[in-house]
Amino acid sequence: MPALAAAARLMRRGLTFALDLALPRTCAACRHPLAEPGVRLCDECAAGLALSVDGNYCRQCGLDVGPHLLQDRRCTECRRHPRPLVARIVRVGRHRGTLRRLVLAFKREPFHDDLLGGMLAMAFERELSDHSVELVVPVPTPWERRWTRGYQPTELLARHVARHAGVPWRSILRMARVVRPQTGLSAAERERNIRGAFRCGSRWTGPMARRQVRGRVVCLVDDVSTTGATLREAAGVLRDAGAKQVVAAVVTRAALHPGAGPA
Image (cartoon, rainbow, N blue to C red; front, top):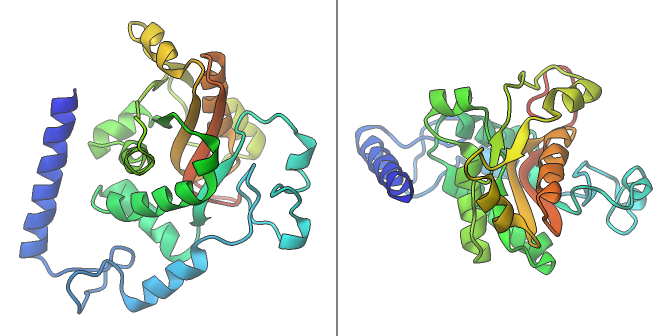
């Protein structure tokens, strides 16, 4: 498997290089032509990215919160839950504008993982370096999406975070059953939809996967979180497998609304 993954990465880089030679360089977010070589975003999207990144947010749920409502870096609602499954969450920014367009483009094409992965790794270092993370685990993608895409976005992001943190990453979590897309579901429906969706390892690799998790501080990696249902479900599986603590790193935190994306 490592050899196949390395070969896939080489092929992807070769394809990217070939496309760069054959096609004009375009903005990673809006696809408009770029005048300067070596840049990834046009001036407008670069300015928009600065508006999407960071901001005041709760370090337990990731939602935007005014600074006057933050206490111990948590919002009022999260302070009512002193022992959460996800001990801390870090995000790159809000799911809007340039950052949202980058995430959506990344779900279609695996050519900007270094850009998003680099930003996520920096957010990890800024917010989670004091948690002594020992293992990075990507949230799994349903197999039909992996099949049609040919890659798993969360794995690409997890690689960057793990490399930057100097710790291993493992695709330990597996889909235990088929789940409906979370888009359009309410918060309660998302909780029900994702319940029991993950397991630690497969039927054959389960014991080894649990040994890798046991007693460790684990960082879950996902591209988008909306209600946090997926992160909580995945964290619960890791805690049941013996993880000492679970934290999470996501590119964006979206607000729940009709037509919202992942959980």
